Length: 276
Image (cartoon, rainbow, N blue to C red; front, side):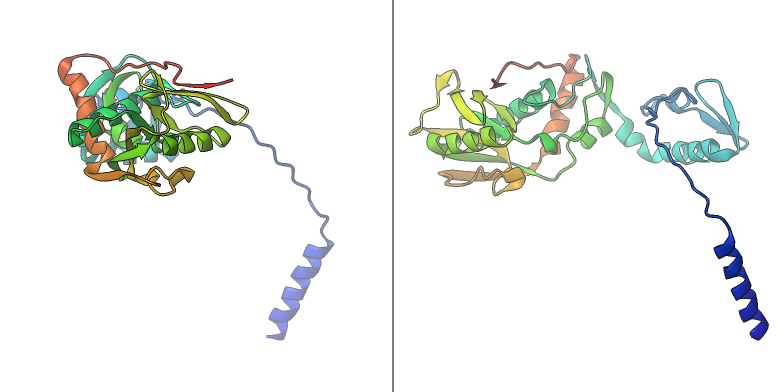
């Protein structure tokens, strides 16, 4: 025991006597691309062309390069092995004319979503829907250009939020929009809003000035009824209906309808939210 103790003391003495080494670290941002392998997102029908293939422990990448052993081969084997189980999600259900991404204060993607939300709520309830309110955070990824697979839409709208119909007085609609003007606007439909320096300048609903005394039909999602993202659409509601099913149950059939009709997914901004 004494010998072991002396050995430990000797090692500590050597460590303390050794000159301190200084290490310098730098960080460099590197874009993740397909430069090494040539891989691209796969559908259910083009796995070898998009991701490559494994043969005898070797990975043959779409770029023409071959990898034997190492991290690239091991990762490729795992990804390729998962493709059979992922095939149902890789089904091509529509095509998109261009990439659509979320941007503030409005975007083609967010406008496309909230306008469909309004239509779906109106169809489900048989009620007139004047306004749509959703949140940017509920749209989790961009619409790709070209093939749109089932997984794209499920990844875009992953949250289990119900569609809702809320009847609100114009004064309560104004309160919600004033709060957005002072903080941050969310996804809006059916309105044309102008704001400056955190205050509303004007609000139109269906081309007419917002009437504080009128009752408006509002389409929204359950997350925003009572405080989600700081919004309480159900506050002072004259009527509230929480519909069956989630957002994806509306958006997935909607996207499939584009594919069945042979028309591309495309949309635009229209100045519905203007910040001066």
